[in-house]
Picture 1 (tube, helix red, strand yellow):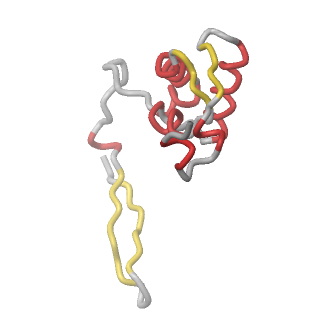
Picture 2 (tube, rainbow, N blue to C red):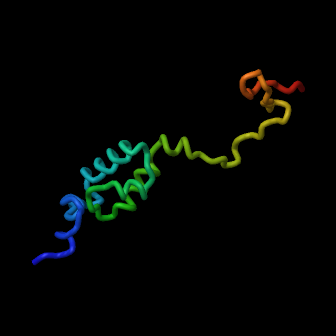
Length: 111
């Protein structure tokens, strides 16, 4: 009895992935390891790189991404608690030709 999977060019691990429960500690460790190895990749990329079929994978991966402190800090949004920058404290960068290339000279505005 042959089928499409036997005739495919996929590797055996992709044709017959290991089925894991989303509630198991081993599954969480695998997801966390993949997440860090892919440099904090998002849920879609992380699911595409998996060699396992994880039951409830999307929920587990989203929970892993949302609980990552590094990702929280880098994707922080302004929630209205920060103050506005005063116009007199803004610095300007003005380009000038130094004979070789354009560079920027940092000049602070006076009050």
